[in-house]
Image (cartoon, rainbow, N blue to C red):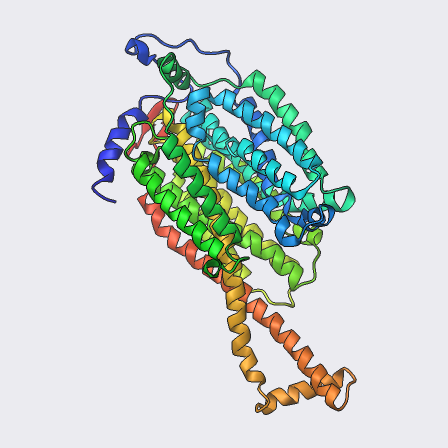
Length: 558
């Protein structure tokens, strides 16, 4: 990694060991001689359950609207293509707010930021439910995404500061259950609500959850001492806002999300709109990297990526979520288009994986708390995901439902072994006062991985299906006696004769050919993401072993 990263790691290292969550903090304002008085003690597990409630609600909203798009399009008199902006607008807003959530927390306080996010998310969820037009719904979805985007990184930072190192694995397990179960539950719940009530209720269900979360958050959540101390030091000083960095990051990430979400639909670089948007995204993001590494108080602290452990955690989660979201996109679509399942049946078929996660993740967290090496879990988890994804590539059009359930269970089993350790060790070598910035960057990388996975899967699915169809159709030439014999046999089996027999046989044969081309394309995608997961395995060896904590004593810190 290089020589440039080592000085940055050395610069971050002293601050990383200065604080330990759960230990009172010396005030920097007095040279470390005075200890900040601790706030009223709240059981951290209560804090974990309360703040995870908000995250579950927000993550659920990223997927719950997917199956309702046809109903939304019909109710608001718009086309199916236009209705997809309901999803794109939310993802764009999320991408903008994620990396700057740490900076906002440092300015207004993490508790205030979390509370404001929950309240506004609830308000704009209600507004989405009453939206009279598609344009209004898209605007409210943007505001909902801006409000809710900061919840995920805020919760990770809250848990990192609320729990001491030896208990952090179990705390992250609670968070991981929420972010893994919510996307699995979303389509199934959304389909059931839409079929039995109205698409508007997929937004209204956020209101009671949001009110409960707001009420309990005001009681149990407080800012950690180091964040309070930092805000006290800055009190009375002029607020420094990195306006240039904020603008570049926001425009760059929003443009990138539009390119990824709309690229396949608009034929990628065959579209002038996609070309200009991609140019804008690349230009703004490159300028943002250059600017944020130069400015003294950046809105996104990219210098954190100079710490080896954090950088490789981000690389691993990028690849893992690329493969995960691609599989999540492909599997229900395969079951509905080629196997004849409806949306609810497809959702129910993949639901057992979520139940397995709820059982597995707490065990992983408990083992981490007992001192198990996180790197071993991460390696085993990626290997297990690889097996599950490869297993999915062995399907055909005559398989039963169980053929989809078990590979998915294995895949999500591996995911649980990856995400909890990654969420635990990524903070271990960073300054504690940078946990919000680190969580924001990590959440951004994870979400972008999902967007990249869906974009790659949807694009290559179409292109490889066309390639397979072209190769197989070449064998249906009139000069091929086997093809003519098959056409005649199929037409005869359907009761046709004469010219109609040939036409009916050719139509039936082409239909089968198209199905087989689609099947091969789906299997190719699973193999592609299997290879991606294999490439991630060597990255685990670049991770540093997190210190093993017994009480407050650190062992094996290397």
